Length: 152
Image (tube, rainbow, N blue to C red; front, side, top):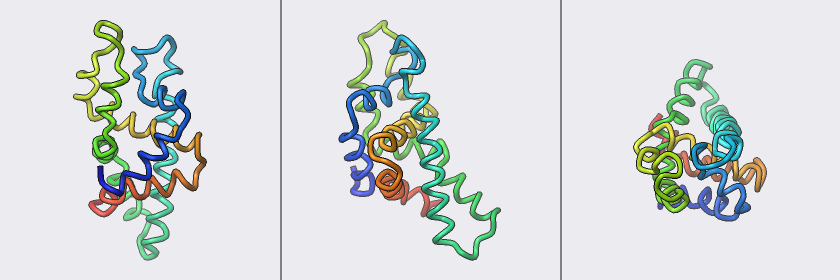
């Protein structure tokens, strides 16, 4: 793991176990869908978007709305989130949390999906936000997505 992703990984590791479990649980692994990563991904998507949008707004004072939107959309895309998920070693954490064979969707199926990895990454961001608040989470998100922002 690079130092860029380390801050977000540390925040997630310091989050309460219940939030960590939810962020790493597919809906087929829990009794009710609300106990899976979906709700946290919904929240994390907004935290990610606001964090990167604020950064771009500050760092590109001459950019117009079209330029800012293009950079933002690339920096927080599903591909970008999946890349950060891999950097955070979320596939390994999902594998550790997966239920026994036959109980829900197999973890191998989940790991093959870029969209799933992106959603889990957003869920981790949502869990960090709930556990630590916006400012520390935003700083960690900016660090973790730095390469994605630069590439965009």
